Length: 92
Image (cartoon, rainbow, N blue to C red):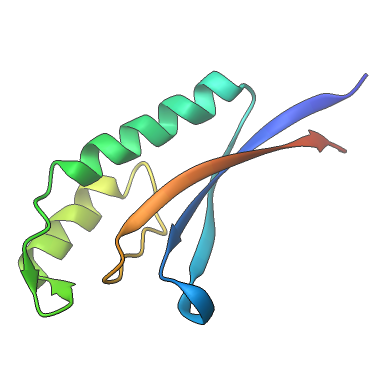
C-alpha cells in the first residue's frame, strides 16, 4: 500500500536569488492547505511597511516571532514570502 505525504515549502526571492525551504510534512492535503492558510493569515496581519526594499527591523522581528511556530525557517526579501505544497509517495 502506498501512502502520500504532502510537503509544505516556503519561498522568497526571484530568479537566481530565489530561496526555498521545507516547512513541514503533512498526512493529508487538507492539513497542508490549512497550514498554508495559517501561515498566510499571520503573514498578512503585518503591513508591508517598507523602508527601501525591506521591512523595518522592528516589524521584521515581530513577524518572525509570530511565525516561528508555524515556519521556524521563515525568510523574507523584497519580493515577499509565499508557501505552497507538493505531494509525493512515502517510501519509508
